[in-house]
Amino acid sequence: MTTLSRVLRILLGALFLYAGFTKLYPPEHRYLFEMALSSYRILPVAAVIAVAAVLPWLEILLGGLLISGWKLRYTASFASLLLLAFISITASTYFRRIEADCGCFGFGEPLTGYTLIRDAALLLLAILLAAHDWWTFRHPMDGGLAT
Amino acid sequence: MRTAMVCTIFFASGLVCALGHAAARPQPLPLDACPGGDRASAVVMEVFSDFQCPGCANLYQENLRNVLTDYVATRRVCVLFQEFPLPQHKYARMAASYAVAALRVSPAIQVKVIDTLYSTQARWSEDGQVEQVLTETLTNEEMRRVSLWLEHPEVEAEIRRDLESGKELGVRSTPTVFVHYRGTIRRIPSTVQWEVLRRYLDYLVSKPPVREKR
Image (cartoon, rainbow over all chains, first blue to last red):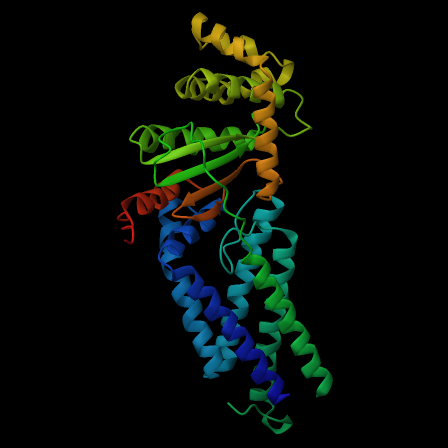
């Protein structure tokens, strides 16, 4: 289970790193991400610009922390909450029938049911990771993580 | 343990496929005409729309009208209107014919026709009285010249070409907007807020021109 946990956190961390990096580079992507966020029609313009500036760095930081395994139970829990927020927003937009750009891993990907399934799979992965680390923290005799 | 590893690899493969899907890009298309502005503009917005679709009217009224005023008029951006009338919209093809015919007269009249059709969409979508709403905006002479082109086979041929072009680019619904810039094509969301779209266009037009290699 320790090996599986390590594989899962590296996988999830790499995905967060990729997601954050692709929103920042090349510089045109920063504007494309603003447009993707804007297309959800949830936030006012000023908030769209602020979130678009902060979120990619947050994803990169989270990705790095997940890969390093430092304070895994907290970082995995935070990743779960972040993914839950993403799913809530994308689902709300999808069911309002707004034709938005996902903006998740690159651009030009319309928001579809498939996007929701993919995000749900990622959320499941993050919850498994967090739950496992919390469990081994509370029950160290049952086998701990090598982190 | 082995089962868990197999599951993880399967899961990871799924995610890699998902990322590949997200990165799919349409192929570039040759831009041989740009009626909504200067075809030498560095930034070309290609808009596939249906005059009877409410989303297209919103896109026009919230964004494209501003693009025409602020960027096309100053020759910084070109808007290429592509007709994509959907079969479920009874009068969309007729409206598209008027827009294409108007372009044959002049780009300025085409913009006038497009503006009128979107502004009065709710009216003519009910009864198909496209000509009636256009006569309220166009002068008699403009209307006469547009009507002359209306029955020309080239108008229908152009709509068919636009539809084919859209299908080749993977357009499945309207409105669909592509931005062509320095050999790349970006599909941009049609529900974007104007201030955010303006930031993107400002970024593109502010970039220095690429020097040609000798």
